[in-house]
Every structure is written in structure tokens, then in C-alpha cells.
Length: 254
Image (cartoon, rainbow, N blue to C red):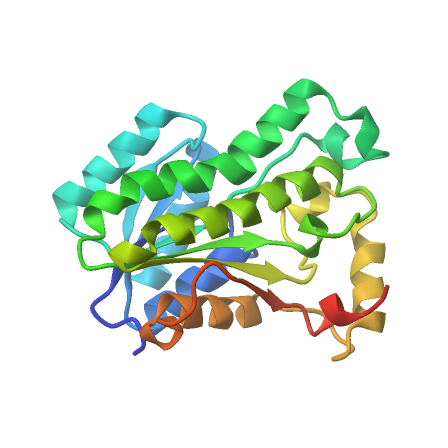
């Protein structure tokens, strides 16, 4: 029961195959009380079908590109909970055309959208969570190796993830004095709805499987375990870090 008595918000559960869902289930298994957000009616339907597995948590509408909706989301949490202990940021998006071909052709609008949703949203959500983290807290986000290496077809998303990882470090430096830790988990390729939009994802996953020291795919449960570690008191001395959960692939030369 690593998270017993802890309350927190998970942003980014799309369906039962998403990494955010695996993290949420693990948090609840460890005793946490969670609230989930949904962007639209279709995703709300998915969450309502999954909610009974979590004890019917709060479901809150949230479009991370809207400052107004972010404020309203945390007003709900303040009214219902008063305080909170953790935030899970598992949101990323870039238009499909930006995840094909070469990076050099990225349009201004695709660049803006990828950074707004995939990177800036972490800062915006953390800013709104601060008044509720009165006894300190923990924040995690999800990244990928494309933040530091040029991965074919990952393109502008890799640049946005690099921005996200930099934000982790700056947020950690800002919030450490308040007892709030901020970290990222960089997962190996996992077949999710978001991953399906990346051209050639299947070949990336096979290459990873063949080259990673553990010689197997990364699974969402491994990422969930690492995430709970960072959010719990077991990770109390860790902040501003990127924890790789990829079977060791990141240490290899190719």
C-alpha cells in the first residue's frame, strides 16, 4: 500500500491499452484515490466503462489547451478534496502528417500544437496543482528516447519531448523547496493508440526488441511500477530525473 491515503489526478487515460491506464490501476492497487480527466464525449464513454475497476473515481472534463478548463478542473479537486498529493501527466499529440517523412518540413502550426499539448501542458497543470499540494507532492510525466536521439518519423514529437524533459528539470528546481518532486519516465515503444499514429512503429518495436539488453518488449505494467515508485515515498530523494524503462535499450549504440 505505497500510496495509501494519497490523492491525485491522472491526465491522459484514453483506453485500457494506454500507459496512463496501467499507471492508474497500479496507483489504485497501492491504495491511492484518483481522479481522471477526459477531453471529449468519446473518451468520457471509455472512462465510464473503465471506472468501476477503480471504484468509480471522479471524472473531470479537461482540454489541456484551455486555461479556463485547467482552472475549472482544479477548482473541482479543491472543492472535493481540499488537497492533493500527486499529478500524472500522460498527454502528447502531434498531427499525423508531422509524424511522417522528415522533420525539416514541420509547419509552424504543427510545431506549436505539438509543444502546446505535449510540453507546455505539464507546466500549466503543475502550476494549477501547486495550491493543493500543501504538504508537498510528486509529479510525473511520460517521455521517450526520441527526446535525445533522432528517431525516424518521430520528428516534431521528439523535439516536444526534449522540451518536456527540460521542463521537468526547471520545474524540479522551482518546486523542490516546497517539497514537490518532478520526474519523467521514458518508456520503450509500447503499442498504444498514440503510438499507432507514428509511421513505421511496428519496425521500431521489433528493432527495440532485438537490440535491448533484455531482448523483449517494454510493457505498460513495468512503466506503471516505475511511476508508482517515483510518486511514492520510496522515490522521495529523486527529482528532476528521467528514468528509463526500456529494457536497457537507451544504453546501446544503435
